[in-house]
Image 1 (cartoon, protein in one colour):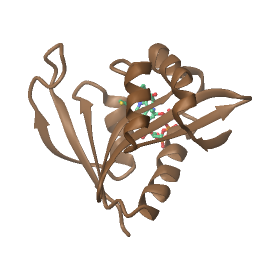
Image 2 (cartoon, helix red, strand yellow):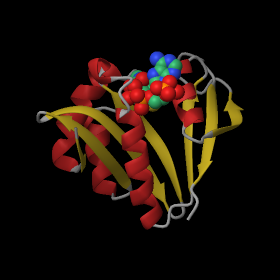
Image 3 (cartoon, protein in one colour):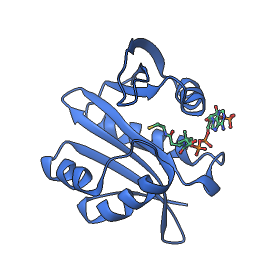
Image 4 (tube, protein in one colour):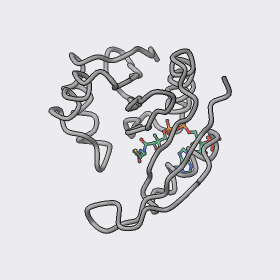
Length: 145
Ligand SMILES: CC(C)(COP(=O)(O)OP(=O)(O)OC[C@H]1O[C@@H](n2cnc3c(N)ncnc32)[C@H](O)[C@@H]1OP(=O)(O)O)[C@@H](O)C(=O)NCCC(=O)NCCS
């Protein structure tokens, strides 16, 4: 597996992976706009030149929002997401990020278990956060600088 920073030229590949493996994932236009805005951080996992995992953040001063993390179905449970998160955290810390926030669907037990195992703590609930009325858990991880 090769881990690599992603840029605007990867937006079509990211959108393609989101469309097959990530409910609520951003569209290609949104991803391109985010790269242009300059606060976006994205890291990809490649297997034989295919993008099979992505993690994205929106950075703002000392905090970052983890927007999306996804691994293609056939590549799950092999530590790819853990590697993406650990590598991204190292980069973000070097850019002085101190806190990472995220929202996750209350029913997404796999993701909640993944985030908890990786040091995120539930801090609140946002009622009716998603378009279909589902609540979001808000989770936070403090990065030790
Ligand atoms: C969440 C997701 C990114 C995890 O990716 P992954 O590469 O399979 O994760 P890892 O192999 O690094 O998993 C590490 C830990 O995550 C948790 N985990 C992963 N898959 C799990 C599952 N099916 N059920 C419960 N826990 C799970 C476990 O704690 C696991 O540790 P363990 O192997 O010691 O049990 C992946 O399941 C995914 O792409 N889901 C769909 C997209 C999504 O919902 N993203 C989050 C919302 S933005």
